Figure 1 (cartoon, rainbow, N blue to C red):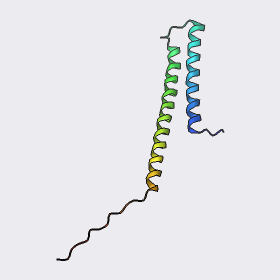
Figure 2: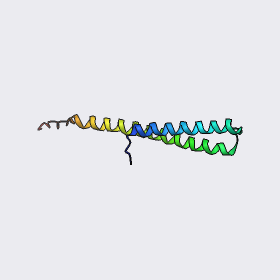
Figure 3: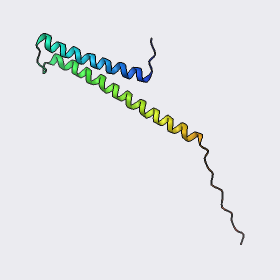
Figure 4: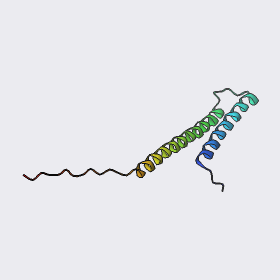
Length: 90
């Protein structure tokens, strides 16, 4: 099985969503179905699910990227320790 990068997977999902929309539109013109036909709503629902999945992957990828960048950047900088204050002897 082929391994995809995050961006390749997202691109593939958007392409599949576009293909579903094209098939739905072709069915409308070929068969003269109404846009409200229940058979077309199946394609629309799958198209919406694939689009939502692609958006979820985009959001997750962006969040993880920012989180890693933030975490990695903060680990490189040394933490400055505050020096204990000198107590004066009375």
